Image (cartoon, rainbow, N blue to C red):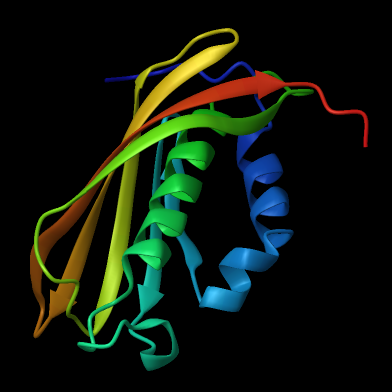
Length: 146
């Protein structure tokens, strides 16, 4: 679906805002690609963030998918808007085992105040992608006085 961003400078704003994401940089997650209404984040496997079986921890996947959904919605928001998650549901479909992970998010329904997005997590091993998790998120455009 083709969306028209409300902010013509959304690319610069998203790049700048992502650089401020301490959680993302701490996890080694990078902004790989984005456009109006969609975002791809990437992360290498890191044993520090694995659970006891050696799979990437569900909380790490959830954190990345939440950010991916948020940034997908953020690309369509007004220049002075900020994005906050107000609800999400995640499904874990397969053990998260891979050399690296891709988190692909896209907006399903943009709105002036409330947007809905979905993200999918893919584990990459030997060049093959495997779907391991999915999320649907509801996001809100807000103006913060911080």
